[in-house]
Image 1: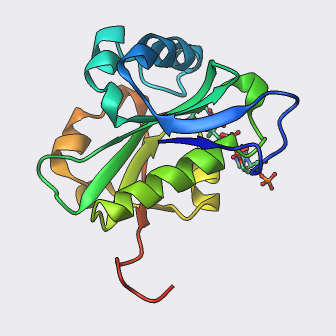
Image 2 (image 1 turned 180 degrees about the vertical axis):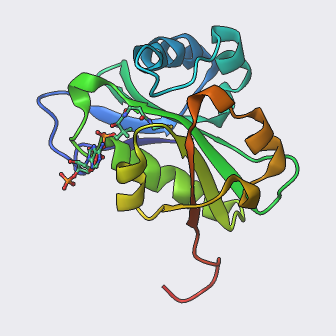
Length: 170
Ligand SMILES: CC(C)(COP(=O)(O)OP(=O)(O)OC[C@H]1O[C@@H](n2cnc3c(N)ncnc32)[C@H](O)[C@@H]1OP(=O)(O)O)[C@@H](O)C(=O)NCCC(=O)NCCS
């Protein structure tokens, strides 16, 4: 589904939409993500790896330019968890609420899918994640298959956000 975002934050003239990624987005997700691999904020992923996983991504378009993306994956060994990865907003569009809109969407989707918690790993955006409800945790508490696949050279910190039980009072 495509959701217009112009009411959520005023863009400088561009029409912003948030939607699930389609196959044709894979190359643009890869190109956007590459901007953050250089400084180590994101782990390098090949174009083929992103194409294989493109259905896991939610993206934001500005008049057809892909300016934000985030992947969500359900680890095979933990049905109650999802993992947020490859989250980025184009540098020219940061601090305008786009990351927050993307995060809200994928947390809502994860809760609707029955997830009880969402994990992520980051080298530098810990303060941002903490601001939006994530708390630091130890890798031991996270899904083993995901932790084992983290690159130890990156020394990422692991965070978790517990999701409200479906059906629980707000
Ligand atoms: C993390 C990231 C996706 C946030 O995207 P964004 O669109 O800039 O975030 P938002 O504009 O929605 O941020 C909302 C709020 O957080 C604040 N904020 C932005 N970056 C922040 C940071 N690094 N630390 C703390 N607060 C931050 C904003 O000022 C804003 O505050 P406000 O509502 O009071 O104005 C973006 O900074 C990014 O692409 N970082 C590089 C990649 C990365 O590190 N990804 C995480 C690893 S998966």
